[in-house]
Length: 107
Length: 159
Image (cartoon, rainbow over all chains, first blue to last red; front, side, top):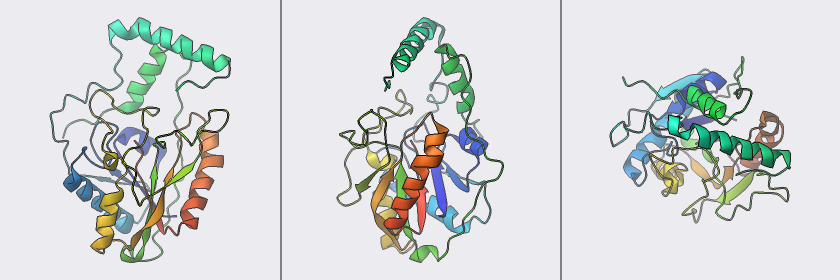
C-alpha cells in the first residue's frame, strides 16, 4: 500500500528508510502541525498528500516549509541528560529493570 | 538552516544514563519498498495511522501489552491518550488531537478534491521495543484493517 509518513525525527526516519517522508521540524508530539493551528495543519497535510502523489522512488524526503510558531528553545531541551539528573535517571533505570524482571510492563 | 535535532544521539545518551548496558538498535532497511499510487490521488481514499492510544487504554490485552486498534473518524475523538509514548512533554502538548492525527485536514482536502476521501476508521499502532512484534504481528494487522476499510493509501503520523 502506498504510504507517506509525517514526522519530526528526521535522523531516525532516514536511518530506518521509508518510502515517503514529510519532515516537519517541530518538537516531537505535533507532527501534523502546532496545536490549535488548523491553518498550518491543513497546509502540512496537503504537503504530505502531495508527496504521496509526486514521489517516484523510495527514501523520498520532503521538508515542510511551515515553521514552528515560537522560538527555538525546544531544540536543546528534549531528552537532555543534565548533571543533576544523573542519579535520578540511574535509579529510574534500576526500577524499570526490576519491574521487567518481575514481568511487569512499565508505562 | 537550523540544525535538526539529533534524536538518535539524545536517545542513546538517555538510555545510557538509565544504566542500560547496550544501546538501542533502530530498524534499518537496506532495501526500502515503494508502492506507487494505483489511481489518481483525487480518487484515492486515505487511511490514517497514529501511535496514540484510546482514552480508556482499551487497546491493551490481559497482559498489559498494547495491540493494534481502530477508531471511528466520525465523530472524531476529541482526545487520545499519549502519555505512554515519547514526545517533547516540556516544549509542547498533545491537547489538540488534530496536531498529531489530522482527521479534519484530510477531510477538508477531500472536500476540495485533492483526495477522493477518508476511510471510516483510523488505525492505532503500538510503539514497541520489539521490532519483531511490529514487523510480524502489528504491521500485517494494520495493513489488513486499512484494506478492509477501503484505503488506497495511508498517511502515518507517529507522535
